[in-house]
Length: 502
Ligand SMILES: Nc1ncnc2c1ncn2[C@@H]1O[C@H](COP(=O)(O)OP(=O)(O)OP(=O)(O)O)[C@@H](O)[C@H]1O
Ligand SMILES: [Mg+2]
Image (cartoon, rainbow, N blue to C red; front, side, top):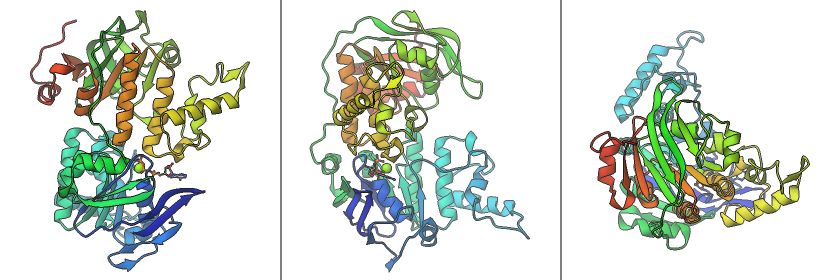
């Protein structure tokens, strides 16, 4: 890609970027949230037309007018947010749009399934071709996306933050798959914020900052620290600064909670837990052990079958989400697009989603647009949301900046309890540093913070106490000072530790 510039209105998302990728390599693309990585790849995949610049594929200049041209030229892309048809099966999704027909318009399903199976075998991308998308895990859905691209003949595969939604085990599997792909001569461009992964899997890394090309480095000759500072333009601290603190009263008390999941299975199964003011309690666990259902139950989004939730000694079990927010609980939800934001609303509107109907944002049913604008501008500045424009719709923000808007809103509500579910998923290291600081700040203001994260590093670094969840129960609670990755890992796998008796 040569001198690629992409403007949105008068905003330069890509500013004269060069990117050279060689056959058979894994090339990482690194940059802060909003740096322009997805935009650049959308240009390569023909979803956007560059304002200026040229694309050469296998030495030939190509005008990538649309994704069909990209596909014809062997480019495949797996997006940050998947684009699968949920009620359809794996095989149907893979062959969608390129059905092999038997006679007139009759789909040769057997042949298609056979082809899919051959591909999955070849690259170690195991999936059940007959399963429906809605019934398989996110990790499996991602394999379907990769298979779909391969089925269309891709030999250059773009993966946009493929690991952001995966569990540690799934990440390891994906890394193996990427290695299989390059061993078979495929080329992979991977966008990721995780420096550890870049070190593990990539040969080269190109860094962009605020739309501009910064450097391309050989990964074996660089360090995580160097990558981080190139990307952010300053030194980044990987360590969370925090001082010892005394904890206060119990803010959240969960007593013998039972909650069922969508399949009517007990996802939370007799769970008890307390979070005190002035502490960050981290919940560590492998994805799918009841974390999501627990948070949904606390916040009123899922019915509690039995057991109680107390907040500041008041019973809030099965109250409505609105009542729970109003009582002083804020949540940074796991799924920012579904729960955290109204994508069609502006940043300003999103910052007051929960209190637009009160003073100072409205009076006697009339919105005070100026107050909302002022408030939003202030949050944008304080939380470094880019671009700095409260009138932009949330859907036009990069993933990381969408997350910053949610965090800004939830932290600014000044809650007694802040629940943070995967708060740094998809964020760059600079932004992660910022989020962690915000959580510690809440704790230092004597608030209670409940952190749920699949990132062990994060739980270990940020929490004061760590509760390990396994099959819907807390199997042990450890002081963060005394915890290490290995002990937690064993507990998370259901081995070792004692039952929590309270
Ligand atoms: N369709 C669009 N209209 C207007 N602005 C856009 C559009 N798409 C992206 N932008 C802006 O361009 C910039 C780059 O966005 P992009 O999605 O490429 O960032 P990114 O590097 O992928 O970030 P992240 O790591 O958060 O995913 C952002 O400031 C974003 O708000
Ligand atoms: Mg992106």
